[in-house]
Image (tube, rainbow, N blue to C red; front, side, top):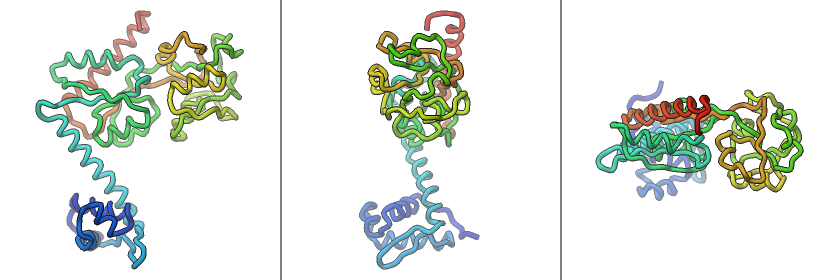
Amino acid sequence: MSGGGRLETRELWCFVAVAEELHFGAAAARLGLAQSVVSRTIAGVERRLGVRLLNRTTRTVQLTEAGSVLLGRATAALAAIEAAERATVRAAGPAARLVVAAKPDGDAGLLGPCIAAYERQPESAPTELALVGTDELVPRLRDGRADVALIQVPFDATGLDHEELIREPRVVALPSGHPLAAEDLLTLADLRGEPIARWAGESPEVDAYYRGYDPESAYEEGDTTGPVVSDLAEALRLIELGRAVTFLPTSVARRFDGRAIAFRSVADLSPSRLVIAWAEESRSRALAAFVRTATATAASLSRTARAGGPN
């Protein structure tokens, strides 16, 4: 059984520095401490836990299995502490504000109406926008740089709460001169062999969604690998040049109507789902008010769209 006593934050910082540097001298320099202080701190942690965290020789420092476990947990714990500090400072005093993160082209037209409605609420706080890439949204929620985010599914929701806001069809974006552009409705089978764009740095799950062979789509992965793209502007230009096709939510396609690109419905393609997400431990009244406003605004826009009103 492990020893008693709780680890202190300073001990976690010390251990993480040594575990990442794998050198006591380098860790001490990073922390601005004497090497003897770092060595005593690590030894004290090992005594209290009753486990060896590091294997030391005169030449090397290596993590034990127990040390690897603690490194992962300690890194997450310290990140959570930093996130709590950022959120607390941001919520206090006259500078209190709510940071809302979203992808510039991925809010389904909801961000503007939502913020306008939110700022009329009595529990609202001044909003600050962070328009960032998809890969920045979840990290900003986890480390406290953002309070809430609008995110397209799928994403890693570990440690986050979320609610669905909008579900809408996706369409395929084709070069306007493509033979399939003459059709009003396509299937994924029609697109077999097309150079479907891959988005740089995405997980296999997200890559499958963007290329139309996720579990909700009626498609099997085949020889459809197209160019790797880093953003929507690059993807659209490659489509105009006849070098790629891609799948987009209808709200995004409407923004680019009129370019040398044809947007066509795909019968068996999974829909686009936009959610609002926030850190699961958050208890902010301003955040709760934003979530309520966002869900109500999304529901109102959906009703208007079904009734045939303006988008």
